[in-house]
Amino acid sequence: MAEARLGWVEQLGKRTLGLIAEVGYLSALLVESLYWLVAGSFKRQPVRVSAVFSEMMRTGVSAIPIVFLLSFSIGIMLAIQGIHTLRTFGAESQVVIGIALSITREFGPLITGIVVAGRTGSALAARIGTMVVSEEIDALRVMGIQPVRYLVSPVLLAMLVMLPALTVMADFAGLLGGAVYSAMDLGISYAAYADRVISVLKTGDIFQGLSKSCVFATVITLIGVANGFTVTGGAEGVGRATTRSVVLAISGIVIADMVFTWFLNR
Amino acid sequence: MLTPEPQKGNAELVIEVQDLVAHYGRHKVLDGINLTVRAGEIHIIMGGSGSGKSTLLRHLLGLRRLTSGRISLLGQEIEGIHRQALLELRKQIGVSFQGGALLSSMTVGENVTLPLREHTRLDESTMAIMARMKLEVVKLGGFEHFMPAQLSGGMTKRAALARAIVMDPKLLFFDEPSAGLDPVVSAELDELILRLRDAMHMSIVVVTHELESAFRIADRITVLDGGKILISDTVDKVRSSSNSRVQDLLNRRPREEELDADAYLARLTGE
Image (cartoon, rainbow over all chains, first blue to last red; front, side, top):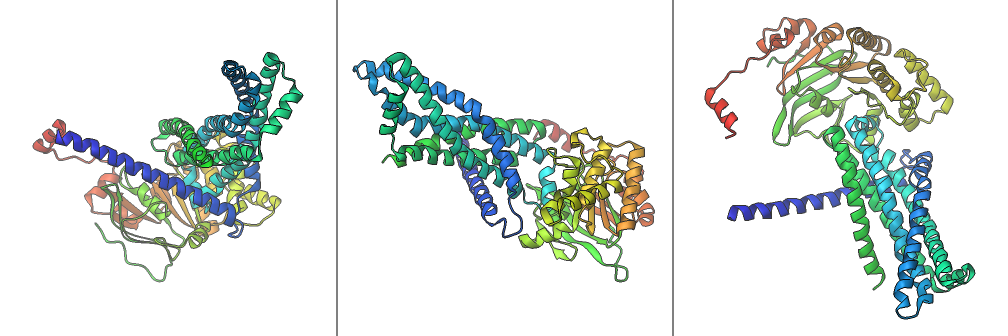
C-alpha cells in the first residue's frame, strides 16, 4: 500500500517536473525567437523578410476562407440563441448588443485561434519534427545557421501579424452572420444593425480581442515548434508530436483565454 | 588499447580529442577517447553498429555535450566556446550527413547556396555561379532546379557534399558515404573524396563501417569498439595489428559471446 502511494506521489512529482521543464523550454524558445527578431540584424544574422512573408501567406492568407466561414456561422448561431433567450423577456431587439460584444471580445479571437492552431500548430510540429528526424536541424546547426532564427522567428512574427488580422476579419464575419439572421428573423435593417453595433462597441472591446489573439499567436507557435523540436522515434514520433501540439495548443488557447479574460475584466 | 602513434614533425592538428567520455543517460557510450586528425589527411573513423562512432561524430560537430574530456577543432576548444566564435568556426567546417539532410522544401540549388546566402554578402548571380561550380565538382551540374525528393540516394549524398564544400571548408566531415549505395556509386564517391582532398587541400573525416571504402581512401584509420578506441594508426599498421578484436572486425568475424549459464538464466527470467 505504502509502495503504491509512493508510486502515485512519484508520478505526480515526475509530471509536475516535466510540466515545469516544458514551460521553461517554451519560455526559452520565446526569448530566443524575440532575441533574433530584435538583434539578428545587428549580429549580421537577420530574420529574412521573405521568410516572414511566406509564413504570413501560409498561416494567415490561406486560412481566410475557413475562418470567415466559421465566424459567420458562429454569428448566426449567436443570433439564433440570443433571440431565443431574449424572447422570454420580450427583449429580442437587444440581441445586437450580445452579438457585438461576444463576437469582438470572445468568439472572434477564439475561433480564429482554434482554426489556426489546427492548421498552423500541427503543420509546424510536423514540419520541424520531420526536419529533426532527417537531421536537417543538425545540418542547419553545423552550417552555422541558428534553427530558431531561421525557422521559428519568421513564424512567430508572421503569426503575431496575421492572427490579429484574421481576428479583425472574423469579427466582421461574425457580425455579418448576426446581421443576416437578425434581418431575417426580426426584420432589423443592415443599417440599423450597423448603427447599433457601432454605438455599443468601444475601442476597448476590439482591443481586448486583438490582444488575446496576440497571446494565442504566441501560444500556438511555441507549442507547435517545441513539439517539433522534441520529436523522437522517427515518423511515428512526428505523428505523435503533431497530435499533441494540436491538443495542447487548443487547450492552451482556451486556458489562456480564461486567465486573460479574468484579468481584463476585473 | 594501442596508443596512438606519436605526432610526427610539425604536422598541424585540425582535430584533437583528449580523454573524451560521453553518456546517453546512465549508459556510457564513449570512454577515454584520444584522437588526433592532421591537416590534409583523410581520417576514417570505423566501427560496427553501436561502437559509438556516430556519437563521436556528433561530439566533434559540437552537437552534444560531453561528460568530460576536451575537443579542439582547428585549434579552438569546443566546450564553453562563445556563440559567435562557434559560428565562425562552423563556417570553416563542412558536414555531409548520412541521409544528406538537404532541406526538403528547397531545390538542390537553393540548398547549396544556403550557407553563402546566410554567411556572405554575395549577390544572387555570384552565389548561383558558385553553387553550379560545386555541383559540377560532384557531377550534378544541371540538377540545381531539382527538389531533394527527386534525387536518387547517391545523388542526394553528392548534393549534400556540394553544400558541405560550398564555403570551401578546411575540415570536412562525411557520415557514412557508402551506406545504402551500390558498389559503383560508392566507389565514385570515394574517388570524389580523394579528389577533394587533393584539389582543395581539405582535411577529411569519414565515419563509415565499409571496410573496402575505408582502406581505399584512408591515410589513417581509427577503429572504435564498444565506445573505446582499439587502434588509431596508418592503414598498414591497422591491417597488421595484432589486436584480435581489430582482426575480427577486419575479417568480418562475429564476436563470440561467452555464455554464462547463470547470467543467461537471470536475463531470461528478467531478474
